[in-house]
Length: 230
Image (tube, rainbow, N blue to C red; front, side, top):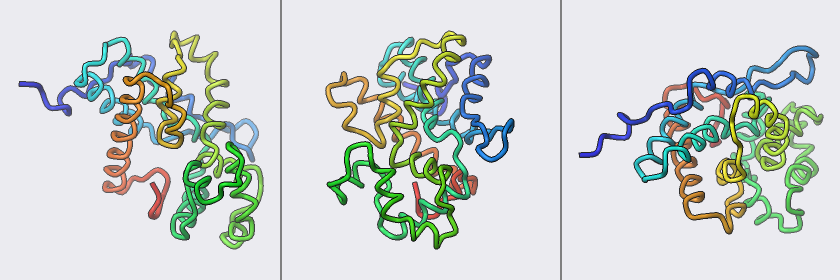
């Protein structure tokens, strides 16, 4: 009889590698030179990565692939490094409450004239006055908080470029499929033409992350301080 997934949800990545990977979420503070924003809800990242690897193993993926997949899952929100929980939550809770699309694909469905990749700029132009009424300053930091959703691919690519030398020093062999898995929630179209197993792993990450985020909110520890925002 197969063991329950909760019994096989192990950390395949060496513990000596986990902390350096989590430090990739740290981000220079834009208003305080020399200071960093300690990034992300690390226990959430670890729980999500454990769950994803356990499911991938149960689905029969080879060990080497699952190990690299778990690294991608640990870094699945790297495009949100520098997230300001209060400001991010304020912007996107307001957006959801007012029916404003919060994913690039949904934005383009409502605003088809927006160029692909230009969703962040379109949002800021359209809702500048609304953000001002919320008390959100119209500056580059706000633009980054918007980009963390509507321009996630661009931001993730930027963060990965910065991280690759560190990943190489850590012995991590990065592959394009790992980035595609990380993008699936916001950009399912970027997996068009990918191998079936890549799409399967991407779907597992989305499902596990959403379950873990729900559990986080139930525990009252939602990192993003969201209201009706996921």
